[in-house]
Length: 335
Length: 251
Image (cartoon, rainbow over all chains, first blue to last red; front, side, top):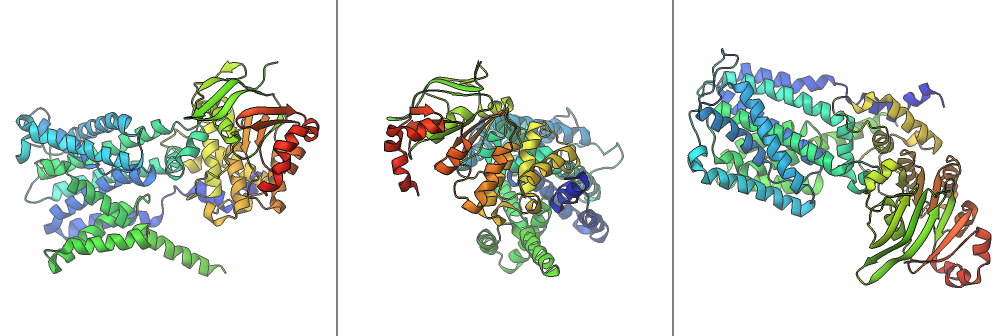
């Protein structure tokens, strides 16, 4: 068998090329930029969507790629948000970019510490333990009112301008929007690199068959802990962004509401697909907007029904449906 | 000469059930060794003890004379002990090539790499394609596991393990469920392995066992019942009584 015919194999070609950027991958970011010019009055909303997308991407790394079932990912979002909040409120550190790095480091450490314990378990046990971790953090933030502001949280955070020039304005979020867009892009490129790397490949291996990964000699637990730590750090960056953009932090950053919403977004968009986080977040926000207008009291009923339909008929979420259609089209093309 | 893989008085109990009883066993370098026995004889448990999926209740496992009783499964793989599973354990959502990439990437130490694309490791891809070509799987390398007939899935099961380039290969019923028209591909692949590696095969298929093995160990109720060349085992009246006579039951 000669080398040329081997790399001619469609499977080898596909694997060697799958990490290459496709033309359409620039679209979401162009859309993000277009939104800035088209809807200057909705930039606060847009900032919120971008942060949610970044948070969902962090969850996708753990849940979608490595198959770590978690219902407590807001623990890391909150850890990042409170890192920014407490450092800024007490005047210890107020430079936004370094604050963000600190938020990621602190959330990553929380992920590492909890992951070392939690990732010995799987399935329902793991699910409950992630929920408990988040509950513990939330209650700690509630109790330690002296440093965290308790139920009221911390407001009017004195965040310095970016590069000493671009001020955060709570009433007009143009700086926040571009800043969050840039940070989301950097984090996304990192996650994208990661999931297409051999390390990312081994994470999907753990998701697809943990027992076999042990049998091919992979240090499964360490891989999971590492993945969980990175995922937590990115969630922490998202939380830090939230605190900086809103200039406050409160218990909602740590709550089950946030953790559940991001999970719904990922299921809706399609987990383990990178772009599922984006599609899901936008779909969720749009649904929320229209359904809550049409049925202000019962809009979540519609969301629930949609989720049931996805769980029953379209496990891959919206992107899964798109993939199925494009596969069918490809099949029809070559008889 | 020290054996490649060895056990000394190895026992394993699950509560009151003694699945492995005082088994002393040696797999020599270059061995083509078969482990047979009636259903429930503890064959798979024994493989699990050898590969480190289970820790024994008592006794020792040695690799090239070194005690590895407490060594974890992943570590044993790094030492060169690899196995296949009686029931396929594959990465179902991935392509055949990606399945084999998994084990080769672990062996060559590519797997911890986070910052380079998996597709840039041409060495891993080329080696995987070479292996798949050898097992006549190259033309279906792009298919995912559920798209394959069972016989092909069995071959992928074997391919993943061969990607580890083991020194000790433990095959748990490699041809089980494979249509007889295709089982020769699996046997041919086993025949083509380097002569130096020690192979232990577990199977019910007597044709396969007698064709393949130079040495046979018979396990009955967790204990070694008989051991010898295929000729000796075939002629052993006791073995015939407990095992070969029942072969019809296993279909």
